Length: 92
Image 1 (cartoon, rainbow, N blue to C red):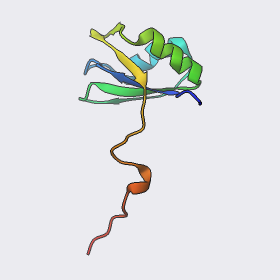
Image 2: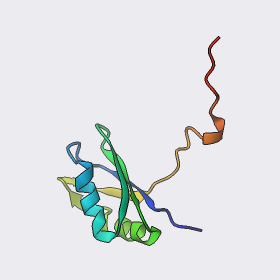
Image 3: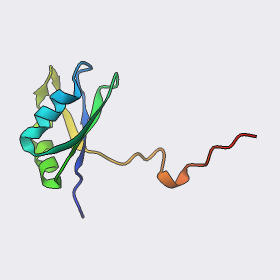
Image 4: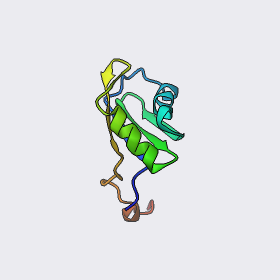
């Protein structure tokens, strides 16, 4: 089973910027994308290699960053809206 390259990062300071998060995770390998959901206190970081994501998760989970203790886990696919269940929009 292939390890995930995408990580969920929770308990973020609402003032944390994507560049700051990218810099933090880049210590463990190439970061391919960062997406912080503004005003929600969490975001996602995708790394180029699964082993880099695993190392970042192990090293950063529970550490303090920007005044908050981070929660770092493998990102899970959204269960509330499976891709195949979307109905096409129609108006009558």
